[in-house]
Length: 344
Image 1: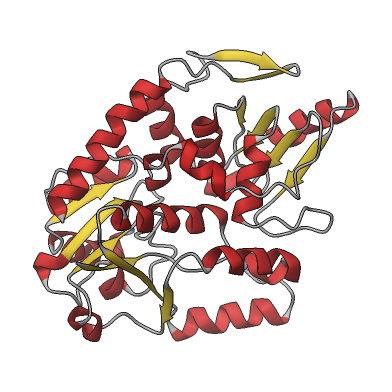
Image 2: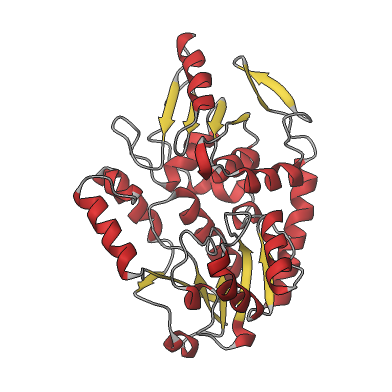
């Protein structure tokens, strides 16, 4: 079959690009021809706001502050995936593809979702619509958006979500039971991710890898203590602050895989630490953008709660005991495969 993956296509976000690769690989492994599309449409008011933020140097686009070398490495990785960014997703796509798979990532986050028709696949024939590990990224849908979300969800015959709170939203809005599946990146084994790694941003010797989104006072305390003891630290954000390594997705994988400890509040930073069995210190993100739902679901599925697996590495409390994770991964991958095969 010809299958179209519908996802967010900012093209310069580590988790987004790696999950897109994983979904593509899962479908291609089943013998399908796969392409990715995403919508760049925004309401005129939102487009104007983004333009003004860029003019005054406060762009909300992380790529705006990334070095050209870092962007080039993203572009190189993106060449592994057939991606088409369209103004809007419309009926003409229905004639080109046999199935449409929306997901994973935060495709249904009301703060990012402007093209509701596109990301609920309303342009496609109903029997072609599948939602794979789709994420809302929030625990509730604003009242003024609820009707559109309800209609969109009811129009997709096969729905799976990535977080427990997403399953609650689907049940409350659409009266449907949606299985909670792993992120597609976890459906790909570490042995298949490692050949993609590139280590030219990875230092020799022992180091701590810090990948922190937004502001985290907890991360600052942990890293300050490590630094005061002379521990080497590689710091990265999603916005390419000066002095950070020019890492694309390949380098990101290597930096995690070779670290002695990973300090992060990133969902995908935590996912790949788990896949690679790396000591993991999950820190809280300050403010309203805390990602507790997706991290809580991850911890619940793989027994990574602080209480259950508290260890110390370099004097930092962390998850370091991954016994039982292989069995959990096998179980979750079987559920992922069963859903995808059934939906297709």
